[in-house]
Image (cartoon, rainbow, N blue to C red):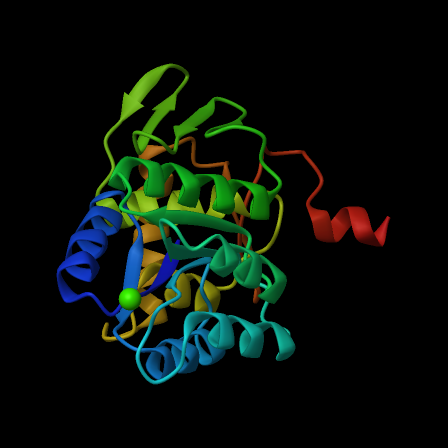
Length: 230
Ligand code: CA
């Protein structure tokens, strides 16, 4: 899952970026509204954390522009404690959630999990697919109740596929959502990671859809694409 963080307070930006990375997300950070707007307009993000008081372009304006351009990613706005009118303006501009400063990092992480969950249509922070269980709060994975040790990239890959269960996810999409903007992107490495993940999990759970990409689903269950055709 790839997250855009737009925050001009350098200390807060650093702290949040670290916390989000530790939680297993790929994070791109921007320090002003123009850069933030550009990134959100051109890169695919699973969620955005957007401060409202920003230099060059304020957060509400950034959000309005994204929504007008049809960008639908979930956005959590950061507001000043006593500015209720900011919250109203933020929601009217298309925000999905807000958090007033100062806040506990744990609460921000919980809200981000909830945004990603809702976007994926999941009910809880635990994802269960056949024998596979992913606890997105603790970034822990079990198979038939036994813990599976994954590297952070393997976990990111699995989590992304699980949030898009039953859908075919292309290699390009995976590269875009698993690496940050500065990473030297090579979609061939995705194949290697999928191979490793398959060896660690029940190999039938991650299916290759020739020419299209990968799909995480219980073998035998119909994929979304197949259901649509039926
Ligand atoms: Ca600010």
